[in-house]
Image (cartoon, rainbow, N blue to C red; front, side):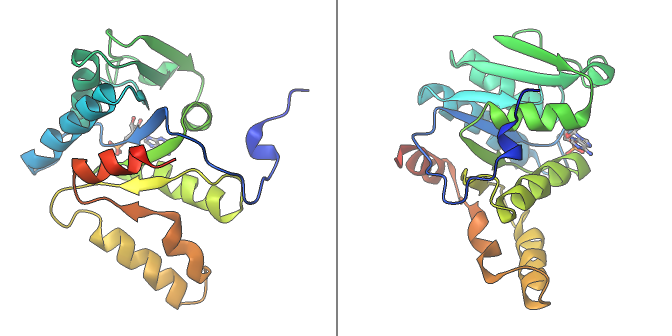
Length: 196
Ligand code: AMP
């Protein structure tokens, strides 16, 4: 039976250079047009930095904006999409690679394995599910990959406040807030990508 990286806890696992980023974001565009603009900026920045984009492969919403911007800027783009969502979320036809999997769980796991860091942009329940699971893996010391949040306005403030609340309530350790870093803008993302 093959082993899986998430089955082998590696506390203190060193992180190396970031060559690929897993972007979680909404499959729709949201109410604020700045979110779609940010998703496109992020896709273009990753491409300009030679950093591969790994994402859900959908052509709709922020996912579509981010993926198309990275493709247009000549970046490497890998989509991972469950078979049952290929039509519903419209698999982006221009990705360098589109991996079709059987479930949302396999998608999340595969995308995570294929990326050196995780970036969450504004999104809905799917985005939150993906983000929280990656943070819970971190809490269990299954990885030490950077997890970044970006969003215009105060999009992520309630989420960060919820993390603080869970810590204050004694259900998570004080380190929890260090598992995730909010980046204010794309220059901050560029700087984070430049770190070792
Ligand atoms: P949303 O943020 O709800 O627009 O969803 C963003 C992406 O997450 C979409 O591609 C959804 O298919 C995906 N998604 C939705 N629910 C889940 C889930 N429970 N686990 C993993 N991915 C999900």
